[in-house]
Amino acid sequence: MTRQAFLLSLPALLLVCLFGVVMFSFAEISLLSMKPGAAVFSGPPSLANYERLLASSGAWRAVATTMRLSFIITVLCIVAGYPLARVLARSPSASLRRFVLFCLVGTFLSGGVTRAYAWLIILGNRGIINRGLEAFGLPTLKLLNNEFAVVVSVLNFVLPFFVMTLFGALKTIPATLEDASRNLGASPMRTFLHVTLPLSIPGLAVSTSLCFAMSLGAFLFPQMLGGGRVQVLATAIYERIQASYNIPEAAALAFLFFILVIVILVVTGLLRRLVGRRFAGDPA
Amino acid sequence: MAGYASCRLDIDGIRKTYAGGVVAVDDISLTVEKGEVLALLGPSGCGKTTLLQSIAGFVTPDRGDIALDGQSILTVAPERRRTAMMFQHYALFPHMSVRDNIGFGLKMMKVAKPEAVRRIDDVLRLVRIEALAERMPSQLSGGQRQRVALARAVVTEPRMLLLDEPLGALDQNLREEMQSELRKLQQRLGLTTVMVTHDQREAIVLSDRIAVMHDGKVEQIGTARDIYDHPCTCYVANFTGVENLLPAERGAEGVVILAGVAIEGIVDPGLAARKGAVTLAVRSEAISLSPGVSHGAIPATVTFVQMLGASMRYEVELDDGTRLVVAEVRRETAPYSVGDKVSARFAANRCSILEA
Ligand SMILES: Nc1ncnc2c1ncn2[C@@H]1O[C@H](COP(=O)(O)OP(=O)(O)OP(=O)(O)O)[C@@H](O)[C@H]1O
Ligand SMILES: [Mg+2]
Image (cartoon, rainbow over all chains, first blue to last red; front, side):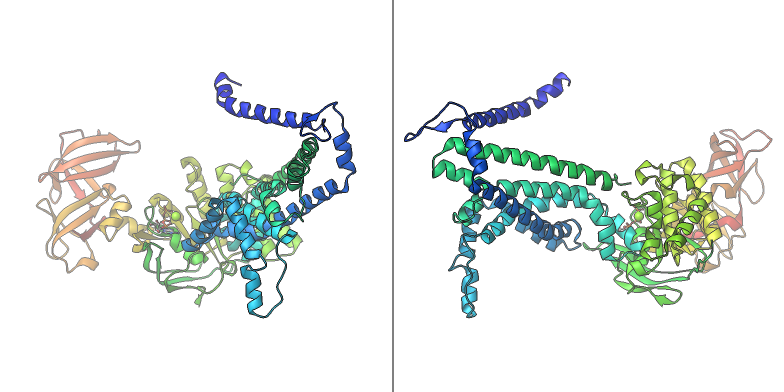
């Protein structure tokens, strides 16, 4: 590394070091325990917190819920987001593209809490949906404080990120390749399957992992729309800090979460390398 | 290779306006006969690609009709037109090998595997890239990509071939080599072809007829010889590299007066009725010089001499100040030098009279 390159990357390196310190500090705290009856934690260091967590069904349930919801959200994201990204990248109608872009940027710009409240209002017992159902004399639905509400709101949160990333990738696929495919006798459907989709796999892999990672870590929406009944890892950690005030155990759970994320990153990285090798020819 | 059932192409009053009001193609009508090669020649942005894409079906014209063998194809989806296109930058599928690229059309047409393999091998041999079959497009040179694109277009035995700047991305040497190869291949297959180029030499070498385009319109259509010797507008003359566009006067009965001297024998039935100021278009090689003063020729003075290898290039000035560019094949005698008094003689059958 040249001197200049080192200097240029210095801020980033410092930031990474800072993360390391934070990481290390809660790894250390996770080895301590709460002093009974007091708001302080102290030694001696032990793995007791981890033993307790690994033996508790609640922690495992949180892991399972987190993974399941993230998976569902990611699948929905692909199903809803791919067509949107395609419209953005290819639609001949400028007004349609502008409309989609406006909606996405709108969600970007409205803050998380605002959006969570909006969903509370929409999905609530007296929300638009249920009042609409009532107006037609139909039974109302329980839409809040359950996994449905969490999935919908987190989807709303990650979809713009997914679409924008994938849009960038789709935009780099030359439209003439699709024309060439049609010209050689492929219907629009087969053109998509044989040309567009394979060429978008590398970009899709990136946006999908982003989407999955963001769903894994989502806290605000599960907290506000799950109503305490949907326990994902982020809310479980929060509960240990705020409700039971067991900071060492929260730290241990956070550390386990961290390891889980690393494992997922490694696995998706390997998968990405695999599909990348299969599909990414540079455009000729 | 057999099985090429080539078609006649009729384009009738096609017009295309893009969003924003750009008229890319403005009322073009033309016919390409079975097995004929038509070159669309014109500068950048004159609507060549748009016209080609209307034939292939990627662009829907606002009005007019396009027919193959008398049947309109405007309502036919692009994938069912069988108008094979070679794209401006080849558009090879980057995630498929050369073999899969070429086989793509056959696969879409559900040609049986053994038959497909045979046809791919045939066409690989035809364009002489047998050895590259398993490579990926990114591992090919420009000329090799061009061959793959051509092979991919012809292997499906299309009804006609559309070439968009087929040699545009190649360097000069390779370009000349590919020109003759492309011409031979086209003649062998007898495929009706429309080809786009902005290089007049390429149009002349590769096609049977040329349509010179300007601002979405066809300015002149004819054989290479017609266009080369008898451009019918100043634009065409200029674009096809006519060096001399001279202000002249038209007298009676096919006589053109240039710098006070009458040039006889210029036959131009199209403009027989026109009198007065005209433009005389003459290529540099249709003018010859002789020393001294001679009867019926125009006196001139040599102002510039340049040696071009096989030929000499002179610039001469007429008595009224008009400048001419003259190219002469080099002769045994010493060439003229600056200041020499000469006489310029025009080959009347290679002069064109254009609107002033
Ligand atoms: N999709 C489009 N939207 C709007 N205008 C377009 C579009 N495609 C082409 N044009 C315009 O139409 C005109 C003709 O374009 P076209 O691509 O047919 O030109 P061309 O003759 O092929 O040029 P070149 O030699 O540079 O390839 C140009 O003025 C161009 O700007
Ligand atoms: Mg073009």
